[in-house]
Amino acid sequence: MEFSILLIVVVSLVAVGLHFLLRDRFQTYTAVNCGHTTQKSGVVYIFGRKCFGKIPKNEDGTVDYCLDCLANMSIRCAWCGKPILIGDPVTLYTPKDPDYKPDWGNYAVYSQDPLRMVGCLHCSPDAALDRAGFWVPPGEVKRVLSPIEECLASNDGASITGNVFDSGEAIPFEE
Figure 1 (cartoon, rainbow, N blue to C red):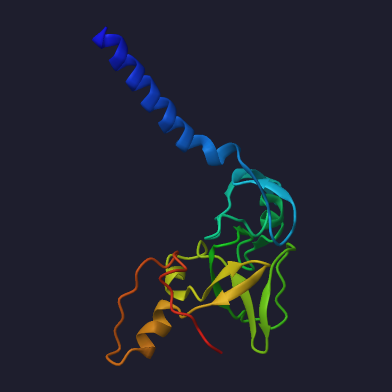
Figure 2 (cartoon, rainbow, N blue to C red; figure 1 turned 90 degrees about the vertical axis):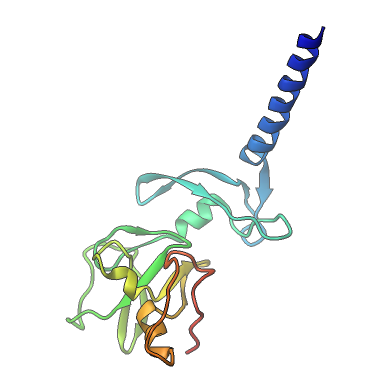
């Protein structure tokens, strides 16, 4: 008798745990900005590559864009051609050649004068120091101070930079 009660309790706890673990996986949302129905996470195709996407929920439980619209906001790095997804940190480099144009499409130009093109942090080992913003909806750069600019802006010439991939830790840049 005691064993069967214990077994029922354990099975019930496992079922409740699985419910909370999987509930968002199958729930659908209507995106506020694009109006499409979407799941919180799933497979999307970005430049022909299969990727797993996950949508952040707003504080009120809504989502702004569907998975496909977020995937369509992706661009390619102006230097290496790798995908830059919504939320990714970016660099803003100026090419030596003012007439430079990548061989691939879907790259972004941040400014024309001076010419600054949007790049990823995968091109060089030092690129994290040059992180100058994040790629955000609807497909633009949210400018933040780079770690080097943080050092230059500090009174003592030093700065402790946290996770350069976390937009929440970045210091906003006002132009």
